[in-house]
Image (cartoon, rainbow, N blue to C red; front, top):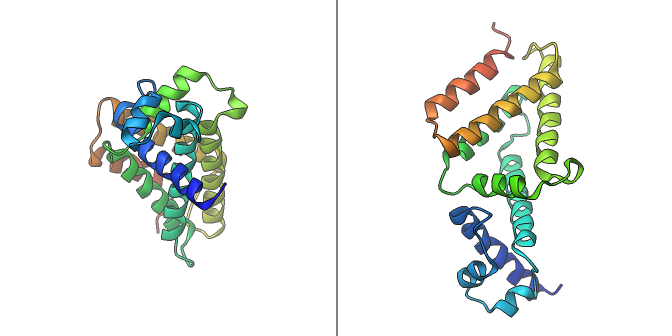
Length: 194
């Protein structure tokens, strides 16, 4: 794909992201994306054959951006507890940004599509996060920062709490204080008091 085509594709994906944020997944049509992008229907179909294909690229872009933001904030000499705290802070930020969130669209997609577990990017993301948190907890134990008998179980529980908070933020609403209370509870369960 040439440079101009790659730029056009990126523009479509970035613009479609806004449409998915606004309307969710199930209500978005190719016409909505055509209108938002200001391109012809044929122009859109040159790059994408369906809203599902566009949505998958939007999710891929989101994951890459989140990884870049997080990696850019981790200091070279950061301790395991610093990195875990930063991860939890980034998750909190995402939960409290209701207006710019794809959460509703993501859940609509996965409820509607019944994606097999092996192919489910949401499950893969969750499992990857569990592994990363598990490694952070293990490193924190070795460094004398954390105490935990089951690092994998603790990592899984942290992710379930975060997932629940994300859903609550979209359905009934949550405050910053509510998120802080849960994050504090997580950290108190791990950090060794001096």
